[in-house]
Length: 444
Image (cartoon, rainbow, N blue to C red; front, side, top):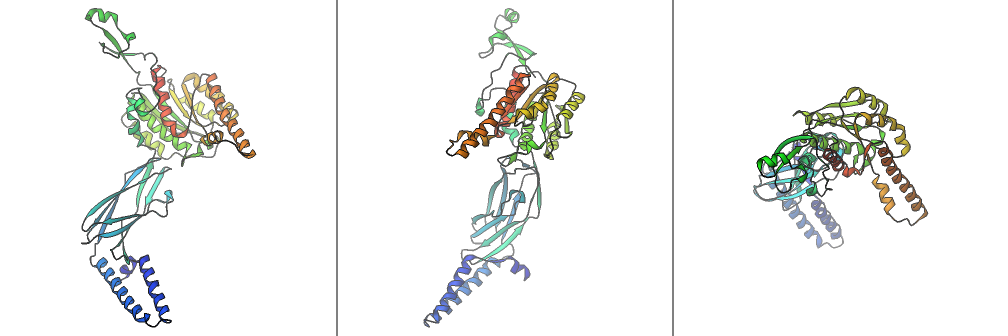
C-alpha cells in the first residue's frame, strides 16, 4: 500500500475538475437545482478517477526504461544520451520522462514528453555538453505515465546512480584526423597552406605524373628510363613535439563556458593525435609553481592514452606561473631540439617582459611557439559604435588592450620566437595549421 501511494501522482486536470465541482456545490446554495447536478458530476468524476487508477495499476510492469550513456564524456562537445522505453500496456500511454542529469549542468526542469503506442518500444536521444572535466553522476530515470483520461499519473523509476567521467575533447580527434594526411585543408574551410620547399628526407624515385613538382625531376634517372622521373620526398619523422600548458591564474578566464585552460587541454589532445599521425613524437607537460603531468615525447601505440589520462585531472591555480622553473626544467630534461607549443596568456607587454628572458633562453635551444588568446569581448566593444561618454571610454580602453596584444606578437617576433594570437574557439585549428606550416617549411 505504501508503494502504491508513493507511485500515485495527481495531475493538474484532476485539481481543475475538482475545483469546478466544489464551486458548483457552493453555487448550489444559491440555486438549489444545481445541487443534484453537482452530485451527479461528483459521482461521474469519482468513477472516472477509480477507472483511471485501475487501468494504470492493473499490470505490475506497465513500462520499462533504460538509459545508455557513453563510457566517458568529451568536454566541450555535444554528447549523446540514449533512452529506451517499452510499453507493456495494451493501450497507448502518455509519458513524462524526467532524467536526473548530473548537477554540474544546473538544469532543474529537464523533461521529455512522449506518447507511446500500445505494446511498443521507442528510443529517444538527448545531448549534454559538459564544460568542465571530472566525474558526472546521473540519478534515477523517472517516468510518469497517464492514460487518455489524464487524471492520475503512475510513477516508475529505473537505473540507480551512474558515474560518467568527463575527459578532454576526444570527439574532436576524428574531426581533425584527416589533417594529418596532408597540408591541403580547403575541405575544412580552413586557410590553405602553401608548401615551401621540401623536407630533407628522400623516399624514392618514381615516374612523373601530372601535378608533380617539376623542380623534383631527376634528370639522371630520366635519361636512363627515357621518360620523366621525379624524386619523391617525405616529411621528416620522429621529431619531438611538446605541448606545454600554463596552469597559472591567467588561464582561469572563461569563454563560452570553458576556461582558457580547457581550450588548451582540448587543443593539446588533438594536436598530439595529429603529431603522431605525422610520425613525429608527441609529449606534454604543465607548469605553474612547478612542472607537472609530464609525458615524454614518444610515438608508441599507448601514447595517446597516456596523454589523455594526464590531461584528465589538470586544473588551474591562482599563482603566477614560474617561467624560471619552466626554463630550468626544459634545459635539464629536453636534450634534443624540439618543437614546444606553449599555451599561455599575456595581457600586457609588461607581463611579457617579465618572462621574456626565459622565453629567449628556451628559444635558443628549441623551436618555441607562444600561443595566447584574443579577448573577444573587447573586440565586440571595439566594433560597437559608442553613443555615450562611458561607452567611448570603454571603447578606448578596449582598443588599448587589443593594441597591447599586437605589440606582444611583434616583441616575440623581434627575438625570433614564433607566436599564435587566436580566439579560444579557433585555437585547435590555428595550432594545427602552425605545426603543418612548420613541417612544410622544414623547421620541424
